[in-house]
Image 1: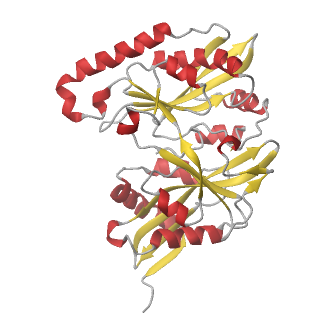
Image 2 (image 1 turned 45 degrees about the vertical axis):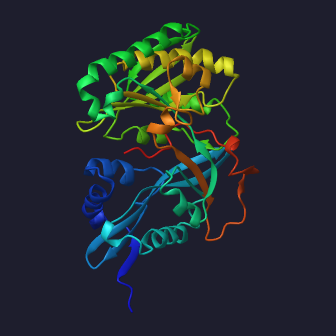
Image 3 (image 1 turned 135 degrees about the vertical axis):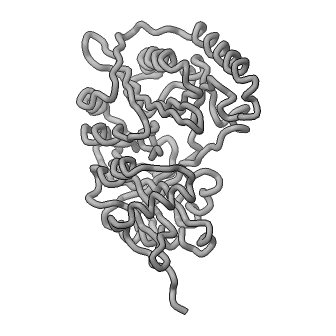
Length: 362
């Protein structure tokens, strides 16, 4: 019996069918400007890194990748983050996810050093089956300003719920230390050269995304989000920054996400706290009308986050209301045997230093 499915590399004529499949399977209406930013303008590849499944003239599956440059110390590597994976409901349970992934692993064996991503509990087993290994749980912190954004049934008491949440946040803010250790300024968008120079000034031994000008010029052009930067300076020199994105939806919560943090690793916790606490204060103050503020848990000191009313998704009550993700990794090649790069174990959580800028954000 002949195989009814053709597993092949994406072609330009597939774009509209891909976007239609995205809406059908993942539930979002994405435009061609989003696709152009995410897949066509990526500076780390010269093609669209998507493998598709086709039956007849119908696109029924896609396994997509978000290319990034990753470094550990002075060593740099090409990394692919799987994203936007989908199979049409009428064609599921036929091995298409596995076949598309295997085709991608084969296709990029000579071009990619490693794969890493953050599946939820539903997609984690499929990743493990195909050779990914667990690094650890990805901890995220949330500051909830409007609980009813997730609970439509509570809309009649929205004003009361928002007031209670805002009062709690205001109390935490009054009790938190207000840092005057640095001067702070704000930018619409991203000061590319400044942030690239600030990132280049520190050597990070753990695996992290390379933050050069090419990265900053591309990464924060996502048309679905608007970005702002708060910058810390001392004696006129940049010493730290937070980049945050804001997305407003008609059918969902207004979300503010802190996507980049600098310095990423340099200095003691006290030094980082002195810089980052004031920047976090500014982000919170500028977004009191948002429904939720979200920040990575690994690169901002926990004490700083908790002081501002942020709570971890690894502990109640957020474990009951959020879907956490797991950091997984896989070296390239059909059957990898060496799980080290730069002498560091890929599966050791302490060997990674990640914010949110490495996450493909829709």
